[in-house]
Amino acid sequence: MEQQVRLSVNGIERESAGAADRSLLGFLRDDLGLTGAKTGCGEGACGVCTVLVDGAAVQACVTSMHDVVGRLVTTVEGLAGAGTLHPVQQALLDLNVAQCGYCIPGMVLGAAALLAQEPEPDEHRIRAALNGHVCRCGAYPRILRAVQRASPLLRHPIAALGSGSGAGAGGPGRRSVGQACPDRAQVLRRTV
Image (cartoon, rainbow, N blue to C red; front, side):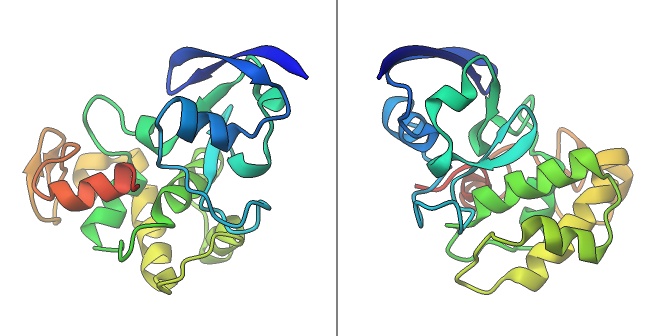
């Protein structure tokens, strides 16, 4: 069924004139060139295609374009604001979490959705929220620590990072997108 679908992606109004049952993942990657959401299992079980729809984490591979009509979609490329990494991205960078980087965009968005709902989650809640996000490199302990570190960054970004390395526009230890570690910052924004 052909249908014109309008939605907002990373704050920009977008339109897709195609099959309404087409996957959101296909639209993001093929039509918009937003490759942060990865192709993985195709069944919504691995988490690498995670995006935010109206702030909730969803798997783009099993979300149809019909499901996002008029909604707000945020990909990892649109998560950082005003040139500064989101606290989850910053914490992952500070703790040098990324290995291959394939799972990181989905993990970032899953953690960002959790922290938006629950600013101070305990370890059990973080594990539950990221259950279903597969990291083939086995970086789960570091990812967990990064999400725990990101929690206070949401409330006090400068104070929480005061002991971190690097300096940027956000204060001591805070990096701007691409500053100080451009390769790792690129991985946290998107990986191809």
